[in-house]
Image (cartoon, rainbow, N blue to C red; front, side, top):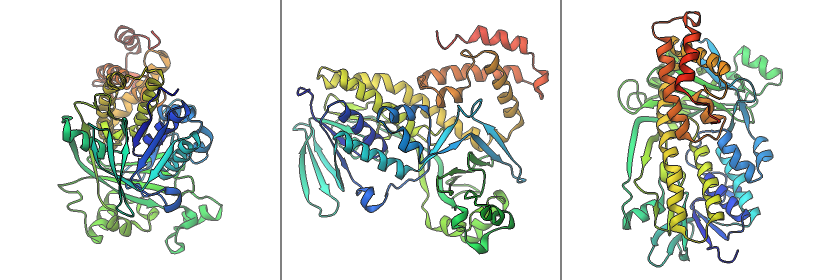
Length: 469
């Protein structure tokens, strides 16, 4: 136990706090430095607050940390996508077969607080309000600046782990001495957060008769609580995720330029006209729409690529600091938690050669990070456009039939990504085969009855090996 080097983690966000917990549980001496103030004292100041979609990969890390019960107490089940058509009609498209295959919506700030408390309970020490000013890798020294007093202190850190997000200060420090081949691919779309309040907090003068009846009956949720709501509109969309107290976090994803875009939808009248035209059924649910749209900033979306994630055995990046992705598969946090679990296990099994551990970590995780980055981009197109298309619905119906006829062989890609811990790279590769197969079988077909299921069975057996093999 004494031969293990102390671990310094830069960033006590979701991934950093979970990693600190897992390492402290394994007997490592762990210190975390977090730029933000302690959220338990100052409230959560996390910047992005897009609700998190918690799936099996993330749940596995939380189970290992002993956090299943407190997290589930604050989470809301989402059975599927509630698709809101332009004419106001809505339809639930289930994620899985039944309620055993669901995802969970949870508030980012509440989850981060639970993880911080778990890390401290496991024995990790967390320093809040500390910004990484610079790093001297030759002497293994970090210069930390106190955000309140501006005092600079030095910290010896033989092993540095960067979990400080897409704008990672540790990544910048490494890149300054050993270029990482950093490339950021902007999506060309941004996001803006809005809100559907709980009916308990809804202004009385804004309540429609239907909402007033729900409120009188004791209902807190203005729309279906157990769903991820989507208003797909081709090149853009709105989504809404439920919060435990009854509100929904609404996110508008829109191009940065063109029409409509964040460049053309700016003034209160432009916002009102845009939403009345494209999201009419959502407008009565958002009494503070104009105020929220005007005050909340436009967030940046894109994918981060690095040629290397580590500096020999001295520093390693993981989570968004190494491979930030767009949020459209709900897997950013889940992928980061997998990183934390993998690294904790490698460090526990290591004999002290950090360079070997870091290289092995990157070898294992890079193909999976690249796979989920690609799938997240593809899912944006599906969410904003395809979910409302007839050919998509036909392929999805056939996908369900083949999954029932060939369990363990034909598994929908979404299920592999969301309800299992199969490597992302495996899900990506098999998903391509299955997508091509579905397109081939559905070509020039408009009804499920028109599809030759005997031929479909034969193609599945030919092209897909059983997953348990």
